[in-house]
Image (cartoon, rainbow, N blue to C red; front, side):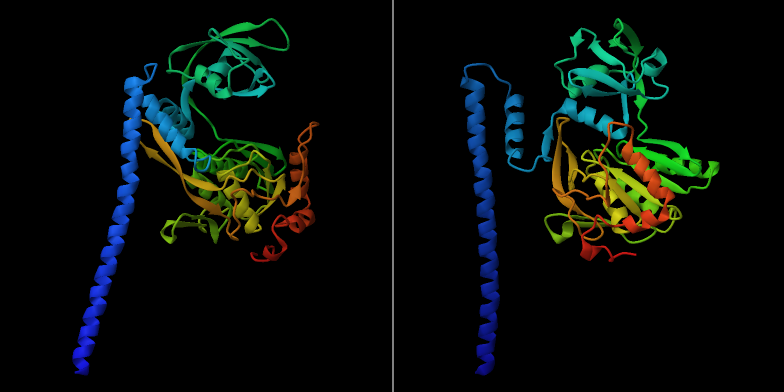
Length: 399
């Protein structure tokens, strides 16, 4: 009798589990049904607007606007990118585009050339750093955004570009330039003096690690490297994998970064490798408020491992991971899927990287670079400053 009761009890458990699973499945189906039922309302509103709104309006405009409205409820880095802007963004990330080869910036209402790209059409035409661009074709630039101005500069390789340029308050002069395919160098490197070198990474593009490695080998051929200043100021980030590879150049083991998403399945850890590591010289990293994202990954990793002194002011604090999804009409969806953590589990997002040595930028010369070189030449100051930007309880966690 007891055996029979056990059998009935077991069957009851099985039946209960089946019923529970069925209930959960029905609940999930109901939630999905209710969510997608709202799309019927969206379709109805779209139909009314297309057919009866007082002015003609394109369906594409309405749908794009609806998508942008939906994403505006999320974080500022989850965005919808229309087809034309998406093509331009991919060209920038690849470091290639058709244009004259100019880096530009704003000084008040003036649009000023930071520098022409080496061996670019602009440089060959005689455009110089400090020149003011007044007009492009028929467009005056004083009220245009930098994004709009860059769009005017770019175009199909082989096409003609006319720019009105003013130099040193002299009479403006027209430059006629034939656009070419521009390959942007993301790494600029030079000698500071007898074994001390400087490398600036403008952004992390698909050849950044290769370019930095070539610069290091080039340095080594001239004079053994005694110290390196790695300048990440005003570096807005870029490709995640390139930041990991750059950090890996200076680390021989251990964690570089952790990216944590919504679930445990969305946790990604990147580790350093022994092969190809440059470990025999000190490094000072320069950062400022314009240092963000991939540049913060490099700064945080080398700081946590006591591999570099981080100098400057606290970085921007953009430590979230975006994935980019190609959509059917040529547009794109950039969506946040995770957040970055340094090797010592510090959250970058919203907090930034605190420097070990706080140095504000001076209007008289490059005070930060001068201080960095001083620390490289004085090992006692350098060693004493390693990891000072970390909270006290974390300072001794890594050798």
